[in-house]
View 1 (spheres, helix red, strand yellow):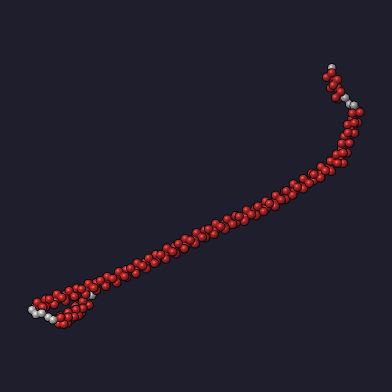
View 2: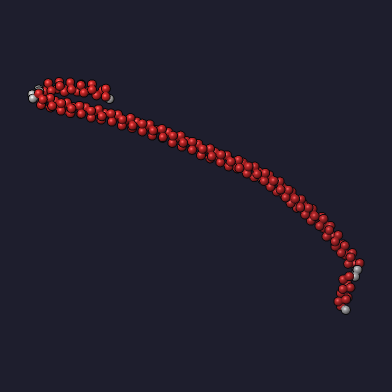
Length: 175
């Protein structure tokens, strides 16, 4: 039965308790309104302003970040373009250098050929002169044996010069 009494006392309407509850509520509401609500509203408004400022700041920073990102993309594209241009220029310079080296090499080869031809011609002339000198000597020896006489040096030189002159005249039409 105690449980029943306890349950019924909880649901019973007691006018004194209701009045005191209302009075307590009014006093607490008055104190809250007088001292706490204004501070609470100020804090909420301040927080609201901080949040709005933070949102605006975030928007500005995002816009600035997007602007910087665009600038970086432009700079990267420009750097790539400059790099590609530098590569093309280097390739062009290398091609010019290669052609220049090939031209110099060809010129040197031509000069070496000309030098070799000149040296060959000089050696050929020397060989012909030696052959002429040997022919003169042999001719003189043959003539000496044929004449059975010994020639003096002056006569020897004169005959040699005449023989060389005659050989030179005979060589030219053939060459």
